[in-house]
Image 1 (cartoon, helix red, strand yellow):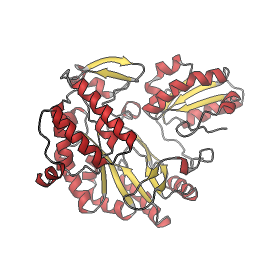
Image 2 (cartoon, helix red, strand yellow):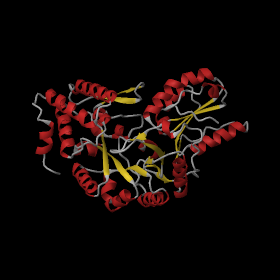
Image 3 (cartoon, one colour):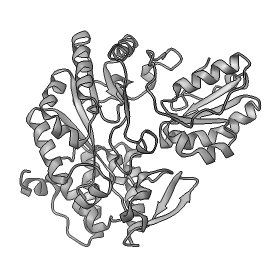
Image 4 (cartoon, helix red, strand yellow):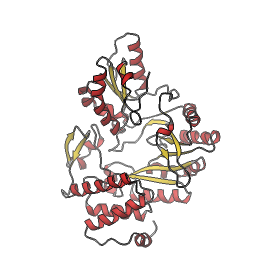
Amino acid sequence: MCCNDLAVDELAYEDIANADLVALHLPMHTATRLALRVLPRIKELNTKAMMVCYGNYAVMNEPHLRSAGVDFIFGGEGEARLAEICTSLMAGMEVGPGETVRLERQNYPVPDRSGLLGLSQYAHLLPAEGPPRMAGYTETTRGCKHLCSHCPIVPVYQGRFFVIDHDVVLQDIAQQVRMGAEHITFGDPDFFNGPSHGIRVVEALAERHPNLTYDVTIKVEHLLKHAKLLSRLRDTGCLFVTTAVESFDNRILQLLKKGHTRSDFAKVIELCDKINLGLVPTFVAFTPWTTPETYLEFLREIVRFNLVSRVPTVQYGLRLLVPRGSYLLQQEGFRGFLGRYDTDALSYAWNYKNPLSGNFEAEIRSIVEGFVAKGLLASQVFQELWQFVHAMNEIQAPCFLEIIACYCPL
Protein backbone atom coordinates (compact mmCIF):
# COMPACT_ATOMS: atom_id res chain seq x y z
CA MET A 1 0.00 0.00 0.00
CA CYS A 2 1.25 3.47 -0.86
CA CYS A 3 0.17 6.72 0.81
CA ASN A 4 0.60 9.69 -1.54
CA ASP A 5 -0.19 13.08 0.06
CA LEU A 6 -0.59 15.48 -2.85
CA ALA A 7 -0.68 18.46 -0.49
CA VAL A 8 3.09 18.11 -0.02
CA ASP A 9 4.27 15.46 -2.49
CA GLU A 10 4.26 14.82 -6.23
CA LEU A 11 2.04 12.20 -7.84
CA ALA A 12 3.39 8.67 -7.24
CA TYR A 13 3.31 7.66 -10.91
CA GLU A 14 4.79 4.17 -10.60
CA ASP A 15 2.66 3.16 -7.61
CA ILE A 16 -0.50 4.37 -9.32
CA ALA A 17 0.34 2.54 -12.53
CA ASN A 18 0.66 -0.73 -10.61
CA ALA A 19 -2.32 -0.27 -8.28
CA ASP A 20 -5.50 -2.34 -8.24
CA LEU A 21 -7.31 0.38 -6.27
CA VAL A 22 -6.77 4.14 -5.99
CA ALA A 23 -8.64 5.93 -3.19
CA LEU A 24 -8.73 9.71 -2.86
CA HIS A 25 -9.67 11.28 0.47
CA LEU A 26 -11.72 14.46 -0.03
CA PRO A 27 -12.39 16.08 3.35
CA MET A 28 -12.20 19.65 2.07
CA HIS A 29 -13.18 21.85 -0.86
CA THR A 30 -9.59 22.41 -2.05
CA ALA A 31 -8.82 18.68 -1.95
CA THR A 32 -11.83 18.01 -4.18
CA ARG A 33 -10.81 20.59 -6.78
CA LEU A 34 -7.31 19.09 -6.77
CA ALA A 35 -8.75 15.58 -7.17
CA LEU A 36 -10.82 16.58 -10.20
CA ARG A 37 -7.67 17.95 -11.83
CA VAL A 38 -5.57 14.87 -11.09
CA LEU A 39 -8.18 12.17 -11.82
CA PRO A 40 -7.69 12.29 -15.64
CA ARG A 41 -3.95 11.78 -15.14
CA ILE A 42 -4.57 8.84 -12.79
CA LYS A 43 -6.92 7.26 -15.37
CA GLU A 44 -4.23 7.67 -18.05
CA LEU A 45 -1.66 5.95 -15.84
CA ASN A 46 -3.97 3.08 -14.92
CA THR A 47 -7.15 2.27 -16.84
CA LYS A 48 -7.96 -0.87 -14.83
CA ALA A 49 -7.68 0.27 -11.21
CA MET A 50 -10.85 0.65 -9.16
CA MET A 51 -11.37 4.34 -8.31
CA VAL A 52 -12.71 5.42 -4.90
CA CYS A 53 -13.37 8.88 -3.48
CA TYR A 54 -14.39 9.24 0.14
CA GLY A 55 -14.96 12.09 2.59
CA ASN A 56 -17.49 14.88 3.12
CA TYR A 57 -16.82 16.61 -0.18
CA ALA A 58 -16.85 13.34 -2.10
CA VAL A 59 -20.50 12.87 -1.14
CA MET A 60 -21.42 16.47 -1.97
CA ASN A 61 -19.74 16.31 -5.38
CA GLU A 62 -20.84 12.85 -6.45
CA PRO A 63 -22.05 13.84 -9.99
CA HIS A 64 -18.68 15.39 -10.94
CA LEU A 65 -16.71 12.49 -9.54
CA ARG A 66 -18.89 9.94 -11.33
CA SER A 67 -18.32 11.75 -14.61
CA ALA A 68 -14.57 11.67 -13.91
CA GLY A 69 -14.68 7.86 -13.74
CA VAL A 70 -14.90 7.23 -10.00
CA ASP A 71 -16.44 3.83 -9.15
CA PHE A 72 -17.28 4.24 -5.44
CA ILE A 73 -18.15 7.41 -3.54
CA PHE A 74 -19.00 7.57 0.15
CA GLY A 75 -18.57 9.73 3.24
CA GLY A 76 -19.27 10.08 6.92
CA GLU A 77 -17.59 7.31 8.89
CA GLY A 78 -16.35 5.73 5.69
CA GLU A 79 -12.96 4.17 6.45
CA ALA A 80 -14.57 0.84 7.36
CA ARG A 81 -16.29 0.85 3.99
CA LEU A 82 -12.93 1.48 2.29
CA ALA A 83 -11.45 -1.49 4.17
CA GLU A 84 -14.36 -3.68 3.05
CA ILE A 85 -13.74 -2.73 -0.59
CA CYS A 86 -10.01 -3.50 -0.26
CA THR A 87 -10.71 -6.85 1.38
CA SER A 88 -13.22 -7.85 -1.30
CA LEU A 89 -10.88 -6.79 -4.08
CA MET A 90 -7.94 -8.79 -2.66
CA ALA A 91 -10.20 -11.85 -2.24
CA GLY A 92 -11.35 -11.61 -5.85
CA MET A 93 -14.92 -10.96 -4.75
CA GLU A 94 -17.41 -8.59 -6.34
CA VAL A 95 -17.78 -5.28 -4.48
CA GLY A 96 -21.38 -4.29 -3.72
CA PRO A 97 -22.66 -0.72 -4.00
CA GLY A 98 -22.87 -0.05 -0.24
CA GLU A 99 -24.04 3.14 1.49
CA THR A 100 -23.17 6.61 0.23
CA VAL A 101 -23.14 7.96 3.78
CA ARG A 102 -22.35 5.74 6.74
CA LEU A 103 -23.11 7.20 10.16
CA GLU A 104 -22.17 4.61 12.73
CA ARG A 105 -19.27 4.60 15.14
CA GLN A 106 -16.24 2.73 13.83
CA ASN A 107 -13.62 0.78 15.73
CA TYR A 108 -10.98 3.47 15.39
CA PRO A 109 -7.41 2.14 15.23
CA VAL A 110 -4.32 4.23 15.93
CA PRO A 111 -3.59 5.98 12.59
CA ASP A 112 -0.69 4.50 10.62
CA ARG A 113 1.39 7.53 9.61
CA SER A 114 4.41 5.58 8.35
CA GLY A 115 3.62 6.28 4.70
CA LEU A 116 3.52 10.06 5.09
CA LEU A 117 6.40 12.46 4.65
CA GLY A 118 8.11 13.71 7.80
CA LEU A 119 6.44 16.39 9.91
CA SER A 120 9.04 18.89 8.74
CA GLN A 121 7.28 18.89 5.35
CA TYR A 122 4.00 20.06 6.87
CA ALA A 123 2.76 23.25 8.53
CA HIS A 124 4.73 24.59 11.48
CA LEU A 125 3.61 26.62 14.47
CA LEU A 126 5.02 30.14 14.39
CA PRO A 127 4.96 31.30 18.02
CA ALA A 128 5.07 34.96 19.00
CA GLU A 129 8.52 34.31 20.41
CA GLY A 130 11.09 31.67 19.61
CA PRO A 131 11.73 29.46 16.56
CA PRO A 132 9.07 27.60 14.54
CA ARG A 133 7.80 24.39 16.10
CA MET A 134 6.94 21.19 14.24
CA ALA A 135 3.22 20.50 14.45
CA GLY A 136 1.17 17.32 14.38
CA TYR A 137 -2.56 16.71 14.01
CA THR A 138 -5.17 14.46 15.56
CA GLU A 139 -8.89 14.32 16.43
CA THR A 140 -10.84 13.37 19.54
CA THR A 141 -14.24 13.39 17.78
CA ARG A 142 -15.67 13.16 14.26
CA GLY A 143 -18.65 15.12 12.93
CA CYS A 144 -20.56 17.80 14.83
CA LYS A 145 -23.82 18.00 16.75
CA HIS A 146 -24.65 21.50 15.45
CA LEU A 147 -26.44 22.52 12.25
CA CYS A 148 -24.77 25.76 11.15
CA SER A 149 -26.34 26.37 7.75
CA HIS A 150 -23.10 27.12 5.86
CA CYS A 151 -20.97 24.33 7.35
CA PRO A 152 -19.89 21.52 4.95
CA ILE A 153 -19.96 18.94 7.77
CA VAL A 154 -23.70 19.35 8.34
CA PRO A 155 -25.05 17.87 5.05
CA VAL A 156 -23.17 14.64 5.72
CA TYR A 157 -23.25 14.21 9.51
CA GLN A 158 -26.63 15.93 10.03
CA GLY A 159 -25.99 16.84 13.65
CA ARG A 160 -24.24 13.65 14.75
CA PHE A 161 -20.72 13.21 16.14
CA PHE A 162 -18.63 10.24 17.21
CA VAL A 163 -16.06 9.96 19.98
CA ILE A 164 -12.62 8.45 19.32
CA ASP A 165 -11.27 6.34 22.18
CA HIS A 166 -9.16 8.25 24.69
CA ASP A 167 -6.25 5.79 24.44
CA VAL A 168 -6.25 5.85 20.63
CA VAL A 169 -5.93 9.64 20.60
CA LEU A 170 -3.09 9.58 23.12
CA GLN A 171 -1.23 6.84 21.24
CA ASP A 172 -1.53 8.85 18.05
CA ILE A 173 -0.13 11.92 19.80
CA ALA A 174 2.71 9.86 21.29
CA GLN A 175 3.79 8.53 17.89
CA GLN A 176 3.81 12.07 16.49
CA VAL A 177 5.91 13.28 19.41
CA ARG A 178 8.40 10.53 18.53
CA MET A 179 8.35 11.89 14.98
CA GLY A 180 9.32 15.32 16.32
CA ALA A 181 5.99 17.04 16.99
CA GLU A 182 6.25 19.90 19.49
CA HIS A 183 2.67 21.11 19.02
CA ILE A 184 -0.61 19.33 18.21
CA THR A 185 -3.61 20.73 16.36
CA PHE A 186 -6.85 19.03 17.38
CA GLY A 187 -8.87 18.96 14.18
CA ASP A 188 -12.28 18.32 15.73
CA PRO A 189 -14.91 20.59 14.14
CA ASP A 190 -15.73 21.50 17.75
CA PHE A 191 -13.51 20.29 20.59
CA PHE A 192 -16.34 20.86 23.07
CA ASN A 193 -18.90 18.68 21.31
CA GLY A 194 -17.79 16.25 23.99
CA PRO A 195 -16.25 18.56 26.61
CA SER A 196 -15.58 15.94 29.28
CA HIS A 197 -13.87 13.67 26.76
CA GLY A 198 -11.76 16.52 25.40
CA ILE A 199 -10.64 17.68 28.83
CA ARG A 200 -9.74 14.11 29.79
CA VAL A 201 -7.54 13.83 26.70
CA VAL A 202 -5.65 17.11 27.20
CA GLU A 203 -5.10 16.49 30.91
CA ALA A 204 -3.51 13.14 30.07
CA LEU A 205 -1.55 14.82 27.28
CA ALA A 206 -0.15 17.39 29.71
CA GLU A 207 0.86 14.66 32.15
CA ARG A 208 2.60 12.51 29.53
CA HIS A 209 4.09 15.32 27.41
CA PRO A 210 4.49 18.37 29.67
CA ASN A 211 6.36 20.41 27.05
CA LEU A 212 3.84 19.79 24.26
CA THR A 213 1.49 22.62 23.30
CA TYR A 214 -1.75 22.38 21.33
CA ASP A 215 -4.64 24.30 19.79
CA VAL A 216 -8.35 23.54 19.40
CA THR A 217 -11.43 24.80 17.56
CA ILE A 218 -14.52 25.65 19.64
CA LYS A 219 -17.79 27.44 18.87
CA VAL A 220 -18.48 30.81 20.50
CA GLU A 221 -21.60 29.21 21.96
CA HIS A 222 -19.57 26.46 23.62
CA LEU A 223 -16.88 28.81 24.90
CA LEU A 224 -19.60 30.59 26.84
CA LYS A 225 -21.41 27.45 27.96
CA HIS A 226 -18.22 25.79 29.21
CA ALA A 227 -16.40 28.92 30.39
CA LYS A 228 -15.21 27.14 33.54
CA LEU A 229 -13.17 24.72 31.39
CA LEU A 230 -11.15 27.40 29.61
CA SER A 231 -8.54 27.73 32.36
CA ARG A 232 -8.02 23.96 32.19
CA LEU A 233 -7.25 24.28 28.49
CA ARG A 234 -4.71 27.01 29.24
CA ASP A 235 -3.10 25.03 32.07
CA THR A 236 -2.68 21.90 29.94
CA GLY A 237 -0.80 23.70 27.16
CA CYS A 238 -3.44 25.20 24.89
CA LEU A 239 -1.86 28.16 23.09
CA PHE A 240 -4.96 29.34 21.29
CA VAL A 241 -8.56 28.56 20.43
CA THR A 242 -9.87 29.06 16.91
CA THR A 243 -13.51 30.10 16.80
CA ALA A 244 -15.73 30.70 13.77
CA VAL A 245 -17.24 34.12 14.47
CA GLU A 246 -18.15 34.60 10.76
CA SER A 247 -19.78 38.02 11.18
CA PHE A 248 -20.49 40.83 13.64
CA ASP A 249 -23.94 41.31 12.11
CA ASN A 250 -26.61 39.55 14.17
CA ARG A 251 -28.89 39.16 11.14
CA ILE A 252 -26.23 37.22 9.25
CA LEU A 253 -25.36 35.16 12.33
CA GLN A 254 -29.00 34.17 12.62
CA LEU A 255 -29.18 33.19 8.94
CA LEU A 256 -26.06 31.06 9.36
CA LYS A 257 -27.57 29.53 12.52
CA LYS A 258 -24.35 30.15 14.42
CA GLY A 259 -25.95 30.06 17.85
CA HIS A 260 -24.27 33.26 19.06
CA THR A 261 -24.55 37.04 18.80
CA ARG A 262 -22.08 39.90 18.64
CA SER A 263 -22.60 40.39 22.36
CA ASP A 264 -21.77 36.73 22.99
CA PHE A 265 -18.50 37.10 21.14
CA ALA A 266 -17.64 40.17 23.21
CA LYS A 267 -18.08 38.08 26.36
CA VAL A 268 -15.85 35.33 24.96
CA ILE A 269 -13.04 37.78 24.21
CA GLU A 270 -13.29 39.11 27.75
CA LEU A 271 -13.21 35.58 29.19
CA CYS A 272 -10.16 34.51 27.15
CA ASP A 273 -8.23 37.73 27.69
CA LYS A 274 -8.86 37.53 31.43
CA ILE A 275 -7.14 34.14 31.70
CA ASN A 276 -4.56 34.81 28.97
CA LEU A 277 -5.89 32.18 26.57
CA GLY A 278 -5.24 33.05 22.93
CA LEU A 279 -8.28 33.46 20.69
CA VAL A 280 -8.15 33.33 16.87
CA PRO A 281 -11.47 34.34 15.26
CA THR A 282 -12.36 33.44 11.67
CA PHE A 283 -14.80 35.29 9.42
CA VAL A 284 -16.75 35.10 6.20
CA ALA A 285 -16.03 38.62 4.99
CA PHE A 286 -18.19 38.55 1.86
CA THR A 287 -21.87 37.57 1.90
CA PRO A 288 -24.77 38.83 -0.25
CA TRP A 289 -25.22 41.74 2.17
CA THR A 290 -21.62 43.00 2.09
CA THR A 291 -21.08 46.56 0.80
CA PRO A 292 -18.11 48.93 1.03
CA GLU A 293 -19.93 50.51 3.98
CA THR A 294 -20.50 47.25 5.87
CA TYR A 295 -16.95 46.13 5.14
CA LEU A 296 -15.63 49.34 6.67
CA GLU A 297 -17.74 48.65 9.77
CA PHE A 298 -16.26 45.12 9.81
CA LEU A 299 -12.76 46.63 9.96
CA ARG A 300 -13.85 49.04 12.69
CA GLU A 301 -15.14 46.10 14.72
CA ILE A 302 -11.78 44.37 14.30
CA VAL A 303 -10.21 47.42 15.94
CA ARG A 304 -12.89 47.75 18.64
CA PHE A 305 -12.33 44.14 19.69
CA ASN A 306 -8.53 44.51 19.52
CA LEU A 307 -8.25 41.74 16.91
CA VAL A 308 -5.81 43.32 14.45
CA SER A 309 -2.93 41.00 15.36
CA ARG A 310 -5.20 37.95 15.77
CA VAL A 311 -6.95 37.79 12.38
CA PRO A 312 -5.00 35.92 9.66
CA THR A 313 -4.62 37.94 6.45
CA VAL A 314 -6.59 35.47 4.33
CA GLN A 315 -9.71 36.09 6.46
CA TYR A 316 -10.20 39.55 4.96
CA GLY A 317 -10.95 38.13 1.51
CA LEU A 318 -13.03 35.03 2.25
CA ARG A 319 -16.30 34.62 0.35
CA LEU A 320 -19.31 32.55 1.45
CA LEU A 321 -19.04 29.08 -0.11
CA VAL A 322 -22.25 27.23 -0.98
CA PRO A 323 -21.49 23.61 -2.01
CA ARG A 324 -24.07 21.06 -3.11
CA GLY A 325 -26.22 19.95 -0.20
CA SER A 326 -25.51 23.08 1.84
CA TYR A 327 -28.23 23.84 4.37
CA LEU A 328 -28.06 27.44 3.15
CA LEU A 329 -30.09 26.30 0.16
CA GLN A 330 -32.99 25.74 2.56
CA GLN A 331 -32.83 29.28 3.97
CA GLU A 332 -35.60 31.52 2.64
CA GLY A 333 -33.53 34.62 3.38
CA PHE A 334 -30.72 33.35 1.15
CA ARG A 335 -32.51 31.75 -1.80
CA GLY A 336 -33.35 35.11 -3.38
CA PHE A 337 -29.63 35.72 -4.00
CA LEU A 338 -28.85 32.23 -5.31
CA GLY A 339 -27.42 31.75 -8.81
CA ARG A 340 -26.40 28.75 -10.87
CA TYR A 341 -24.06 26.00 -9.77
CA ASP A 342 -20.47 26.64 -10.86
CA THR A 343 -18.88 23.30 -11.77
CA ASP A 344 -15.36 24.77 -11.72
CA ALA A 345 -15.73 26.41 -8.31
CA LEU A 346 -17.78 23.49 -6.91
CA SER A 347 -20.10 26.04 -5.39
CA TYR A 348 -23.35 27.81 -6.17
CA ALA A 349 -22.92 31.34 -7.40
CA TRP A 350 -24.78 34.01 -5.49
CA ASN A 351 -25.54 37.65 -6.14
CA TYR A 352 -25.07 40.74 -4.03
CA LYS A 353 -27.99 42.78 -2.78
CA ASN A 354 -25.96 45.77 -4.01
CA PRO A 355 -24.68 44.97 -7.55
CA LEU A 356 -21.69 47.31 -7.07
CA SER A 357 -20.33 45.10 -4.29
CA GLY A 358 -18.98 42.54 -6.76
CA ASN A 359 -16.27 44.90 -8.02
CA PHE A 360 -15.41 45.87 -4.45
CA GLU A 361 -14.96 42.21 -3.49
CA ALA A 362 -12.70 41.60 -6.48
CA GLU A 363 -10.48 44.53 -5.52
CA ILE A 364 -10.23 43.47 -1.88
CA ARG A 365 -9.42 39.87 -2.78
CA SER A 366 -6.75 40.98 -5.24
CA ILE A 367 -5.16 43.17 -2.59
CA VAL A 368 -5.29 40.44 0.06
CA GLU A 369 -3.78 37.84 -2.29
CA GLY A 370 -0.95 40.26 -3.05
CA PHE A 371 -0.33 40.82 0.65
CA VAL A 372 -0.28 37.07 1.32
CA ALA A 373 2.25 36.57 -1.48
CA LYS A 374 4.48 39.28 0.02
CA GLY A 375 4.27 37.75 3.48
CA LEU A 376 3.23 40.98 5.19
CA LEU A 377 2.41 40.99 8.88
CA ALA A 378 -1.25 41.04 9.89
CA SER A 379 -0.92 44.59 11.25
CA GLN A 380 0.65 45.81 7.99
CA VAL A 381 -2.14 44.23 5.97
CA PHE A 382 -4.76 45.81 8.17
CA GLN A 383 -3.29 49.28 7.83
CA GLU A 384 -3.30 48.99 4.04
CA LEU A 385 -6.91 47.74 3.99
CA TRP A 386 -7.88 50.46 6.46
CA GLN A 387 -6.64 53.16 4.09
CA PHE A 388 -8.08 51.54 0.95
CA VAL A 389 -11.57 50.87 2.32
CA HIS A 390 -11.89 54.38 3.73
CA ALA A 391 -10.93 55.75 0.31
CA MET A 392 -13.55 53.54 -1.34
CA ASN A 393 -16.15 55.06 0.98
CA GLU A 394 -14.81 58.55 0.26
CA ILE A 395 -13.93 59.05 3.91
CA GLN A 396 -10.68 60.39 5.29
CA ALA A 397 -9.05 57.51 7.15
CA PRO A 398 -8.12 58.35 10.75
CA CYS A 399 -4.56 57.57 11.75
CA PHE A 400 -4.39 53.89 12.56
CA LEU A 401 -2.79 54.41 15.99
CA GLU A 402 -5.22 57.18 16.84
CA ILE A 403 -8.22 55.05 15.96
CA ILE A 404 -7.02 52.29 18.28
CA ALA A 405 -6.58 54.81 21.09
CA CYS A 406 -9.98 56.46 20.64
CA TYR A 407 -12.15 53.34 20.65
CA CYS A 408 -13.53 52.43 24.04
CA PRO A 409 -12.95 49.02 25.65
CA LEU A 410 -15.55 46.35 25.11
